[in-house]
Amino acid sequence: MVGDQLRFIYDYGDDWMVRLKVEAILNDDEHAGQLPYAVKGKGAGIIEDCGGVWALNEMMQEEKAYGDPDDEDSLLVFDKEAINIALS
Image (cartoon, rainbow, N blue to C red; front, side, top):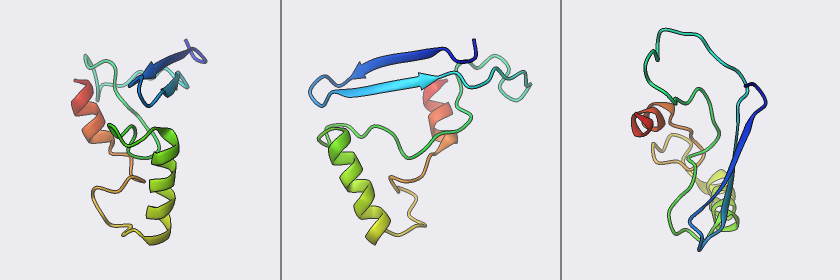
């Protein structure tokens, strides 16, 4: 239902605490039969063994200041297609 939330801890060494929230329930034919699928997001997401959320935030701040905005491996870019491939 809209407003439902799922919270979980990932990679117990770095203590990633993730919250997913249902913002809308969509009825579309584009993703028929593929559940779940991503509609939108922010940033590249969790990076394995980077030192946790604090280290990732620091890396993202450095990229904002000095990075190449057209870099396909940017930490700042949410790749919806790659996420949906991983979920399928």
